[in-house]
Length: 479
Image (cartoon, rainbow, N blue to C red; front, side, top):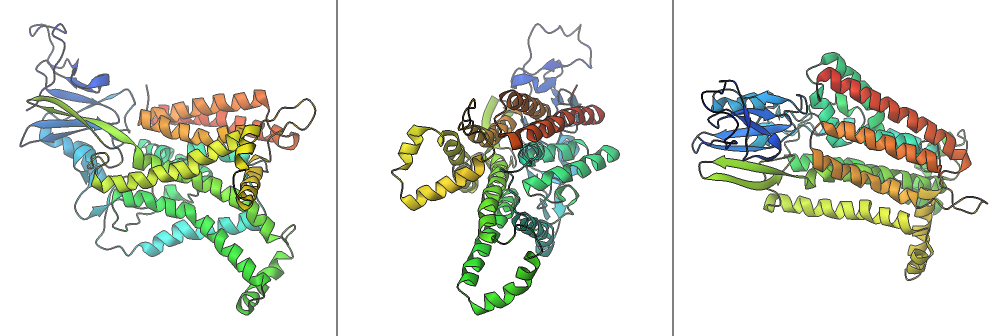
């Protein structure tokens, strides 16, 4: 069996207690504790260990399945190494490197924060997936379009930013696993989280039943991108129907009559085309943030260490599915798609929104076709409409902050990749609080938006910090 190295001056054999443990020098950051003879005894929370009985090798690396313990707490491993997999993986119906694979005939449920694999023999749950994921989203789409709700030109901006930050997919999974052993706190977290997750296009995800489509982990993750893109598809479909109605296509005119009568009773609903423009910026914003969150899973590696009789070797594996080495053939296609999505809906809009107010960027846009330039102008104006533009006396142009605001989601994604444990929740709350305090001092919003935006958001951030501390203290996720 592989053993760990320890410092030779820790203690002498005659002085050491049988229960005394030491840092394993082969594994960085004090992830593993060993006894005097170098046998692995304890493992830091949010890490997993696998024992390979044939060779006696030990694989160690970050995982989400032990995040029920305190961040800085060590988990005692069974004395018999063959029981490690049972203790760490069986409760999630998992096996393989760092519990990365589902057991045979088990699959990861879709549209869920739960990482516990479920048993299923067919993929007949598609109707449940459509009903739970797409039906509420359709109602949400109709509501926003009909009532012309634009998160960039209303008092929703700060609230939506907060909701998206605290209910990202990685954070939702950490909360789900951290509270699973405390029924009262679990119910409280699920109820509160369900209100916030609406703005991540997740309706009742905390309470979602086990929906099995027999998809692998990466395919299951990418289904969330399909869900996020669904409102954009509805926008395209609605716009096409409006064009057909304007051209008096008989079947469309006949089908539209009941809806047109209903819309007459709703204020400001006569111009659906204008509403679609506002709705596009809203749903593109929601789609982009949700997609970045999903791509974080697809692109986040984890460094693993393999202890053997010949020493220690390290390699990178995929964090969400450690059975896959990072960027192998079965992963690289998903990684390429993830990089393209992050670049197109994350990096590119952030750059556009950040530099659009500046004259040098306006000159660069002159090289674009006029139709493209007009589309870009309409898109940017809807995203920046609540910020001061410097035209009023004594004010500055703060429209560039929309790019910083949008790009901050990328910062949260990188932060998650660097922590990969429950401390992400605390760091998330701290960064949000600092960011909102800076906004209050700068006050970049126009008068009709600024006061309510900052006050509501500050209240929510402070409340989130308090609740996060309470949750973590009660369920024991940090010391």
